[in-house]
Length: 446
Image 1: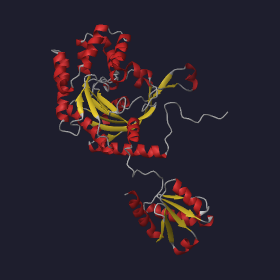
Image 2: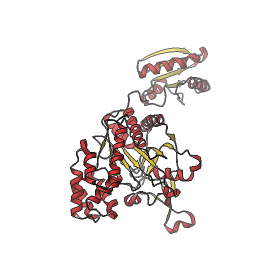
Image 3: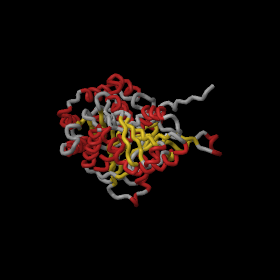
């Protein structure tokens, strides 16, 4: 019986075309983030399990991939390490560990894979990349406004024009739940249920609220409030609902400040207050954001303020806020919509260098080095097979040009270049061939 060859469920192999698309998207996101003054950071794939546990809430803890102890401790069946669940908790650990080396205002971006023991679905995988951007050291609403602008610029640069950034506030949600009669010790449970309103609908949320011990009267009040949204006057409605609750009013004013500042950025017209937005992670303390497009169940990314997370490691709170774009979901939507540019390279080489005799291979390798030095991507065909077979291989791999290096070319110091699309060929001096090929490649891609 042969061994199974498919990857583990929820994991994927990435073939060359997949990798090129990913690199294209990552390069654009990086350029946008760097324009906003964010610096790169990387952290290990594996963290101590105590670093991750207890930071994501009940559901998050269940989705952490745990790594069993090894060696003499293997028989215990206990875990001491885990694959990172997100990039935010590792960032908080880094801040606590390297505080003396980092500036007071630290702006970082991080694009790396994370792992979750989740149920795979369309655009949802167990291993996936996050494209995070965070600012630590300031509680100013300018931080939230700039984060929303940065992700808006990134999606616009990728070709998206129909996205919406939804924004809410965790303290406001807490006040709303209190007014609706939900006990404080049930707020976390209620938020987990409310976060699924767009996915499971009102009936699904009502069932989950009941299962989590929230009474029918409170559940009805919560759902009536969230189902009577009027985005145009949402802040005024929210302020009226929380009444004299100081924390709730402060949250409304914070949202108002973010919205006012955002009107001066590229997020203007994209951002709207949505009181039903909850975000399931328990470490959020202030404004929370999520970005959506019409034809994707779920979001392309989200984030929020988490002023207390670093304090779990450092013993003192540091203001922090971040936003994460989900690379896999972006790729799914871009692929389905045909958003990748036709000029995106689909081949590993510009020119296949063909020879007729194995004795000529040293000449071919020297010429390949010369052409590569000029900037041409060259694939040297390693076998001296019939020229027709070599040309057929180049055509099947999308390589636009074939360089023919036979005895006559070697003697004359030339290279015959065959344009497979135009079905033409020209001869060039070997030291000038690189420039000619590059110009032909540029014309080919115009």
